[in-house]
Length: 220
Image 1 (cartoon, rainbow, N blue to C red):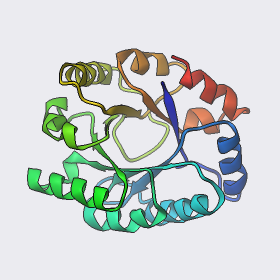
Image 2 (cartoon, rainbow, N blue to C red; image 1 turned 180 degrees about the vertical axis):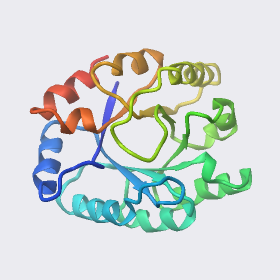
Image 3 (cartoon, one colour; image 1 turned 90 degrees about the vertical axis):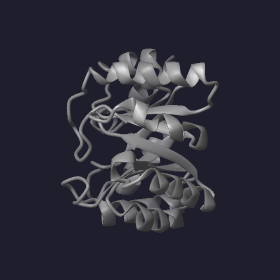
C-alpha cells in the first residue's frame, strides 16, 4: 500500500486552516513536518513548524511525520515529541557516532513514537543498514535537503532499489520513504523501485484539487 505524506512547508500564510482541512478531506495519510534549523541546512523553519504541528494537533487526528533537518537532534526530538507525532526522522549525517544514532533511536521510542533515519543524496545506503532492525522507516532524500521545489535526482532510484533488496533479503519490516521533487512525472519511478511512503509538497499544494493528485500518487 502506498501512503502519501504531504509537506506543509509551503502552505500560504493566512490559508493554514483551510489547507489543513482540505488535505485531511483529500485523504493524505500524514502531514509531513520539515523542521530546519538554519545550521544543518540553510533555511530555518523550526519555529514555524512547531507552531503548525501544535495547531494541526488541535484540529486534526491525522498523524504527523516529523523530519528533523537539524544539528541538535536531541533537543529537537524532545521538543517535537510534545506534539505526539506518529514518527520522528533524524538525519544520519547529523550524528557524530554510531552510539549517538542508537541514543536517538532509544530517545524517540521512549517518547512513544516510531523512528525514522534519513540520508542525504551523497550518503551511501550501506551506512544505514546496521540500524534498520531497530527503526521503522528509512527516508531517502531525492534532492538536497533544505528547500522545497527542487528537481528530482533520478540517480537516487538505484539507492531505493538497493535498500528494498536488502530489506527483502533480511526479512525486515520497514517503510521506505522518499522526499524531494516527487510529482506526477516522478512518482511511478520511486514506487517501482520500492518506496511505499511518498512525500510531496509543491505538486499537491499547487493543484486545484488536492484529492486528484493524492489519489494518483497512491496508485500501486
